[in-house]
Image (cartoon, rainbow, N blue to C red; front, side, top):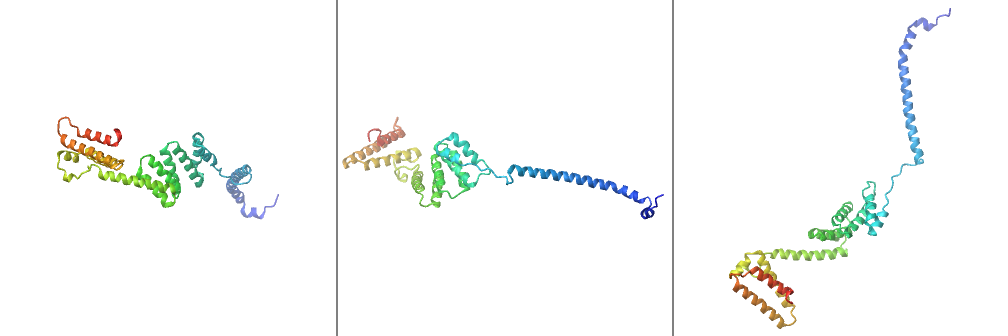
Length: 281
């Protein structure tokens, strides 16, 4: 018989029982380590595969080629420019400088093709990205002018000059528009006012003219047109003849107003047409 060890003697059957009680924990730990090793292996393999695909270099962000957009826009080729520029403009990774160039190029192409609203939209987006573009402000001002929005045109021309006081096109455009707005303002101030002072109107026909905006405007236009042709007359005798014709019209108007069949508006329109060249002036 094998002699009983000291341990066995001290613990009896308790050691076997203790090892059996601990075995599930050891098994669970071993299983966990195996699973962990598998996950780590998969991770390592994935990294190795990515490394092999890129040759060990970081993945590069593909660059958008701006050249086809600029070339097609410069050649006025809408079929090629539309997709080429859209590829640059709609890509979130396009550099800011390239995006501005593409917007300006496409906007200019739209403008040449008469697509004013689209051109304004591209120029406006470019100006949001860079508010210091004097050329683009001037270009957009000219587009506003084509749309008939003179206040916005003047505003853009002024913005261009604020950036570049020596911008020749913007200076010429701003000056022309300032004169036009001044003229329109004067016309608005005179709208509905005849050539004479209504506070001193005594004749019935004069009071009728003062009470009607259309007749008042016609009277003022007749007066201005008559003054112009007299000023442009070839000689003093011709100027006197023109003034005498105007005086005859006024006398006839005053005498015939209120009579059956007399149409004051029609008579004034015919007089204005005659002065402005219908009958040889």
